[in-house]
Amino acid sequence: MLIFISTLVSVGFGYLFFRIVKPKSEIGSKANFYARTFLAWSLFISTSFYIQPFAMSPSINNLTPWFSVAIPFGLIATIIGYLYGKFR
Image (cartoon, rainbow, N blue to C red; front, side, top):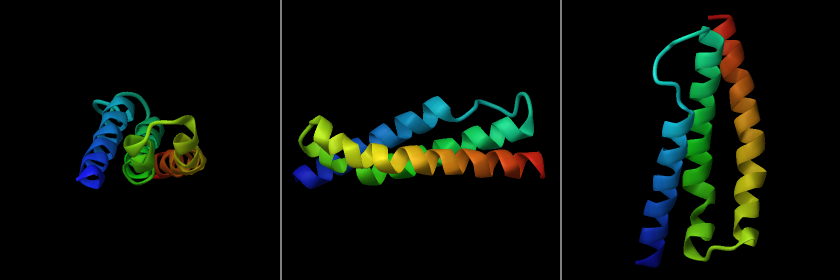
């Protein structure tokens, strides 16, 4: 039961980060819109999978794997989204 609850919490945090980062509409340049959209999806995916240990037992040691995945994955997704929007 604890695994199910931690999975729900991690997906909830992922959705929260997704809603915060994703732009409301395509205002401004397409490159920035797609960069933020790709970043939002990458945060949702990395948070849903890698923050589960933190939801089970909150400590800074359990956040380290999430940081080590979310930061590089987010940077790569932002760059790919920016390039996609720039050349689309």
